[in-house]
Length: 150
Image 1 (tube, rainbow, N blue to C red):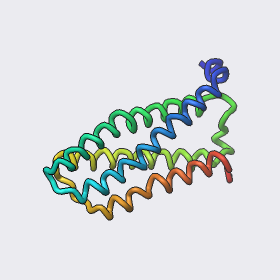
Image 2: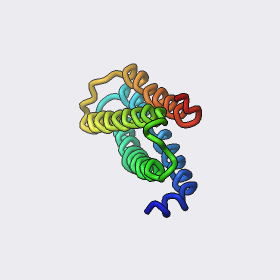
Image 3: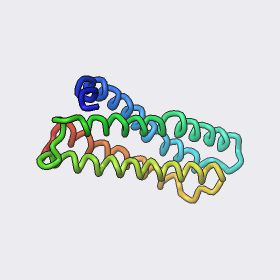
């Protein structure tokens, strides 16, 4: 397995980046759909259309992209010689941010189900604020990976 990871590291990294881009695209778009959906009357044709869009976005793009990002990320993490957990402190911050991003993903899934049941309890303003969470976490992740400040 070690040889496979080392021999294919650049391919693994490329697929990780592709997966992360797809995941982030969905993480930015789904809360924006919630903003519009929150202002739509329950039971309206527009509300029903938002439900379809949100379900498809989460199930067809965001969920698979997150799973693949984790798989390829863990493959890179376990490639010998790439990360030294004793001295590469940036990886701890990055992994914490990724876990928080995954938790936020879970909140998005929960909120989508509430919309599906016509039980949304949050305002459009709440979702506007929530829409900033993935951006902030992405900034931390990118800085940790590119700059590696510590």
